[in-house]
Image (cartoon, rainbow, N blue to C red; front, side, top):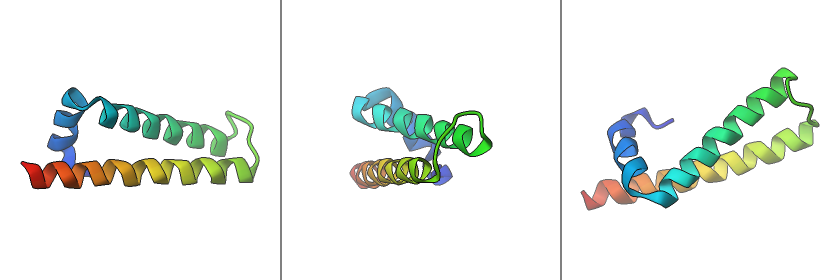
Length: 73
C-alpha cells in the first residue's frame, strides 16, 4: 500500500498514534478479507463487501494523512 510513501509511513508509524491505529486496522481488515475469500473464515458475500468498504475508508483516511504530512515536511 502506497509504496511511494514507504519512508513517510515508517516515520508516521513511530510518531502518530492515530495513523498507526488506522494502519493496523487496515492490515487486519485486509487479512480478514483474504481469510474469508479463501474459505479459512466463513462469511457471506455481503459481509465481505462490507469489510472491503470499511478497508477502503481506512485507506482513504491513511492517504489523507500521508498527503497532509507530505506537504508539511
